Length: 195
Image (cartoon, rainbow, N blue to C red; front, side, top):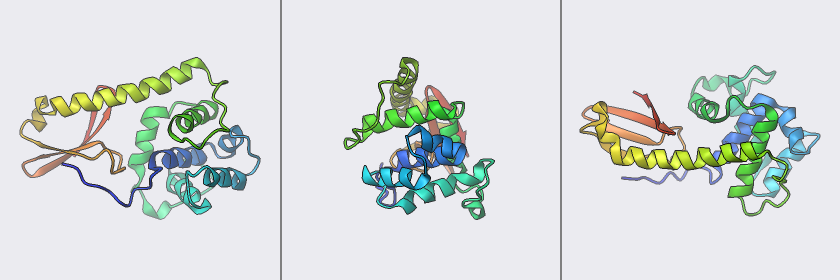
């Protein structure tokens, strides 16, 4: 069973990755894209169609700012409302420095956005390209494995699976078992359950 989420931005994933990069690495992230000021960085992403307005990009940074030790407070009043987004990106790329993280974003843009022709991915190390590709391939295979085998997990044996991958809330599936709903985020062949 699947539901459409009309509130999800069409570039939800990359906007979260950009917001995370801005909050964590600030101007180091911006300079890796070849910009001296953040406003030019924002305008570039509007120009290539990632966001319709500069405000959309600023909002993504505000969303992640409270989770990093930086001078900005961002949306501190939201508490941990968006922590699941940070946890997800941390699980994938949290150990990367600003150069590697920026290269991951460039690879994402090169692969997903047709209008991007100014991103140079030739200088990105082969090992980082392989890591990026493996993360994509392994993630898809793990999701298919989970769909076919979720009932082999004791807690999910009599459960009803709902696909939540397109909703953008930081988890892939909801498994309803009796009076409980389990949220499952799939990474490689590991399962993180949140009750």
